[in-house]
Image (cartoon, rainbow, N blue to C red):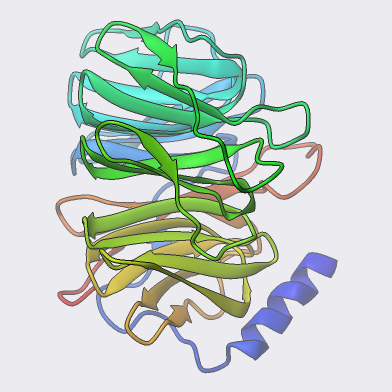
Length: 331
């Protein structure tokens, strides 16, 4: 009941918002209620997509072949999977809890050895032999973790000395090229790789930055906020961080154009963020009071949002969400 009241208050506070003005409406992609949590979607093409998640002890992967979503049998035991990155139909990497990395070569899934048991929350690469993965448990006994794949081995990467204190968790990694990569995480930490060294960038955020995306070196957007939404925008010269209160926290972002970000978040948020006016327009009322965790768009213009009952402590059931929408021309 408390959660429902918060959602109702959010809808009233953002009464000006309505469903996105362009494109088709959001619809359920498939019934994920028995799949477990879904944490991310990715894929090399519109007819070759993955949705990853599961329970804390058992991984679950759904696959879209262009016609329908179906569960995959991995053939390897793995805990919850948190993120994925796909280069091609025969080159897909998924990361998850307990330092887990799974790889698909087009014929089978294999588990790659890593030098950590920290939960891995994000993975991104500029090339099949140049991937980064990030993680950490977010508590004092956790460790902010940065790994690199060189085509044969995952290795731990030394971090720069951070000005931000008590950063025990990196949450996502994304880049525009091999020499332009960003990491975001706990307490608004941001790291940047220029091809030779990692450095910390102070962006004016103090709450967690949970995910990021962009359209090029002069447009990168990070979103987060555990209570109220925040967004940090890089314009090629400087970072600007804005609070979107009273909107609840944002968990995922994806971009097709430089001026609009597709975003998802807690309490069923599905929306668009105008980066010129910093106006957040959300689907109202939200389709669920559960949390969306990530959003991903394919080449056909379809966007896919996944999540579940992620905010519920020790849930008796792991309930997932999977929704989709076709964008309009200007989004």
